[in-house]
Length: 110
Image 1 (tube, rainbow, N blue to C red):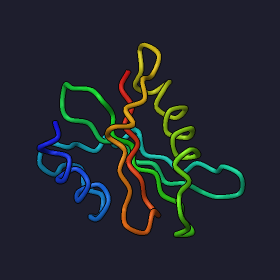
Image 2: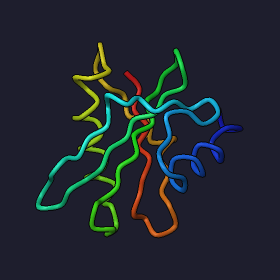
Image 3: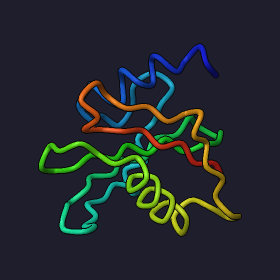
C-alpha cells in the first residue's frame, strides 16, 4: 500500500473532488458538513473498491489549520454508523496533511 500513498496524498489533498481518480473512489453518500466547536468541517470519504480502509478528508471551511485530534474524532464518529459493521480501527499510518495543515486525511478501517 505504501506505493500508492503519494498518489493518494496528491489526489485527496491537492485536487478538487471528483467521483473517481485512479483507484480511489469518492463515496458520494458519505460527504458532509459538520459543525464542531464553532467551526464547520467538510468531510469526504474515499475507498479503494472492495477494500478497507476508508480515507476521510477533513478540512475547515474557514481555511484555518485542522487539529488532527479534532479531525480524528469527527471522522471516526461520522463513518461509524455509515460504513462500519464492527468497531472502527484507526489507521494513523495512513494519515496525511497538506503543507499548510488545512486539510488532512484520516485512515479508518472497520
